[in-house]
Length: 252
Image (cartoon, rainbow, N blue to C red; front, side, top):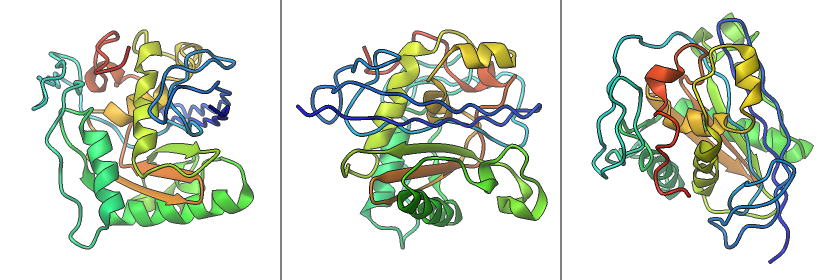
């Protein structure tokens, strides 16, 4: 099996503007879906090149966001946010192609509350993936920049984002399994910037399962995949939006 190289960029927007950017070199896992890789950080999973979790926008709900078991019987959340259960798949826009459904299914099998497809986010995601594919590098665009305000941002809000750049073409949605596999490294909800940075590459996972996220749009151009979310990874809201550590679904 050829060695595969993963580049991960994570961006997180919090009330005090935090940016997480990291690079991961992973050894070859077995098959496309994964055995664990080696690499500088150990244990990256799957094939393809890992891409980035990150930042978000406007506030998220407080209180008890009890995420019970999903339809697929994943672990729930109690007072914690979105569980790892399989929420029912949500059909995309009627004009969406099969790739849209693949992205939705890949996300919603890990969530209690399913995401819905957002055509505007998808169009922006694909456009920016094209720019990154041409440039040959991963970095976050203005709409996901923590300093982005007003007309520079989609609807005046910051977004959440996950990026992946692969060494070869991969199926639509396959990046989500690799992002979710980072749950093995999630130790505790970060409460400050230092704790956030110390956990390493886990915030693609937290973006995938973020309970208060309602919409997603993804696009692929060449070997670059880009998913945009309406919110996620807001410091202070992890306990309400991410399942407790040690509750990974189908990841060992």
